[in-house]
Length: 261
Length: 261
DNA sequence: GGAGCCAACTTGTTCAGACAAGTAGACCCC
DNA sequence: GGGGTCTACTTGTCTGAACAAGTTGGCTCC
Image 1 (cartoon, rainbow over the protein chains, first blue to last red):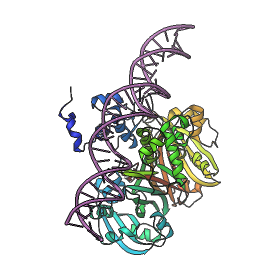
Image 2: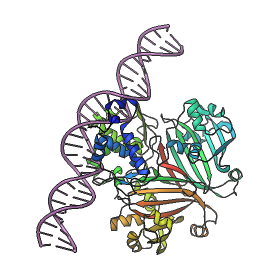
Image 3: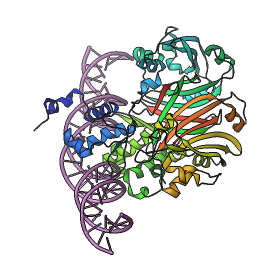
Image 4: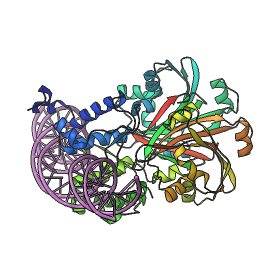
């Protein structure tokens, strides 16, 4: 009475995770437009029998999709499809290069300066370092298809300074290189987004007028153990990027703050 | 009162839903600084015996906190505290008035115009209406402690136009009024954030120079059934607000997009 | 002292069953 | 036809159990 070779018990040793398998299949179906926006998903028990999994496993699958903002649910009613577009991965958000690649655009980056200096009070705070610890301060210009798009000012924690200093001036992605060469991988992030006008350095580098609007994304990346890796101030030319967040009454990852946050 | 309030302890939740009770207690302990950032939480089995609950229930509690960005976890190691600050509720993000109130600041709002007109192509798309359906177009200025802070341009779907038209010109919160008077409650949202320069109308209303940077937050709110309520374009004076998002390798609610998104 | 291994601990995945709570459509009565 | 009730369905909450998989610190062995 089984559906086929795949459902035979031997294969969950191979690292296939059942609920992710189900989530992947549902996600694919949703993104392909098989379910219209507003359409109802099959019920949990339906899915459970169809995949010969327990209801708990199915619930974990649909919870994954809900966290991605693809579907919504309310007690008593079937789950509904909220959107068709896929969400970016952590890597794509964390790495400018990875993101641009996914778009098929060409990234050029260039370190304009790399100097070690004592951390400012804010940098020490954000990086969880003792005040005055020497950090690596970096200025970098990033171009998308040859267009100057973003100015990046980063403070790297002392313990990652050496590998970053060793990278070539036109390294594609600092975070990718750190992961591959030093095994330092970012797992958590916090982002502060606001607008400001271009200073003279910003204006010169981005080839815009001083006072032009910029979209600023400051963020800190941390390892799996919660240790901060870098604190960075990215300034995008207005119109070049938009940030997108979806939320719901049960999951609100975005918040509004006053002033400088 | 929306579901987001549950996690703050209001409504029917407190004593009845076990995992929220546990999550509330843990959240309180974390926010009060009982656990330092980077500190380890008790193990699941510890918590389970301490609360005489099953491990599944405890896992649901800590999953709630993880979704809020307060704690992080990796297989094999104890959960760690990532931050001390509490996250805003859906209501605070959705309603400018509710947010400002939480800060103890005084909000003044004023409708500058309310007209019915056919929806543009984008409005029809965002509101899931047939092209050309008559929507209610609203222009509103919002002040924080008397300072002009935000210009709001909203398109309300036809089916909510009447109650919005009936509101007084200085109504504190449109979404609150809709919830209380008409039972229309927002459950889902999607937000697009970017920067642009102030046009002449923006400049006049916000009392800034034309061309000054603005932070723009466009968002659509939808009901529990996924029906869009409003599509709005909010423009904040630079420096008045910052948006904040936290993410992790397992949950990435934020994404970067090109251009106009 | 250092490298490697092992064991205890901890989180991740999955199952099966039970009851609570909310929804939506069918049905009945007036 | 309109309105209320009732019921089948569906999601939410919770339990107890088992095994897989990753982490950590201590121990042994060289």
